[in-house]
Image: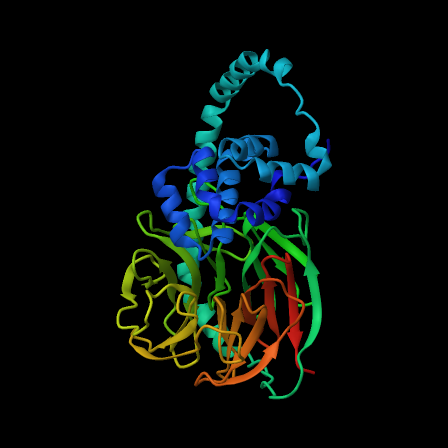
Length: 439
């Protein structure tokens, strides 16, 4: 039986399991804190079930097979889901191959691994020491070059930004991607950012990597998102600072990478709730991340050395608890945050004081259903990915609706603007990235 991976069945399963996802979670070995975290992290049962399946796959690795998952479904008294799976995917009616022969060699393999570990222990320690030395040298070189970088940035010629023309249609320039793990393929593309030299960075969450493309959708390079310990980091969102380095948030960590993927700095937040969005304020170089935990979420603001500047979020004046999803900063230093619990956008000043908000739950042009990513163009216009309404909307700086962008999207998630004014967006459930412009 040829199966590309257990992940191909997740969408079908989450649509069938839905409100019974907690029963499945127990049968997959999740404890109460894990289940509570997933419940607070996602807004509906289908999204929670998808988060559960992805986290199970991450934990179990190659042991996370479709047959193990079907046994868990049976234990959770979800036999109807198993029967539906077998009806939709006939190959699942085949019995898994026996591992009896492999089991006989386990002890021999373990002994071989132990010998290899002992043999390579000294070499690994030497490599680690050399790597730490190189990282230290790189960090020192970055500090020495900061002044020169500022001069170069100041000397750059300004990029001409095309203003948004109300009534002028947006045209799709290119769309690329598709489900998979190969070059230019995605498993849940979430965050997106564009550098000053028009390189497009995509947080390919399911593949635990950042992929880099041209504005025409041509593949350039990629790197696995890892921590200095070697642990892999599942990227939720990505931002670019004024030096061209990347800031990635995910799994309770904030990590700075070079353009090529070298880890430069980390901010570890082990005792916080779910971290979702990230941005870098160009004027102050401060890093801002959204945190969803407890009755109300908040914004965490850090200097790039990891020291915390403050926590923003009190006084939002919303009827429901504040759940910040994504964040951006405009040219005046105002902080704009999407709130997918109150279905609106909050605008804060640079000190974190609430100025105003716009939007409400609904499908009209000035309303939202679970708004996700947000960005601001060079003219101060606000662009929002309206997830459940399956569109991207443009507003002026005061929150007045201007136009729609894009069509044919399943779940628009992340959105950003290139230096030239083109809009780049990801489709989380369509596994694609598209670029739009006004001709």
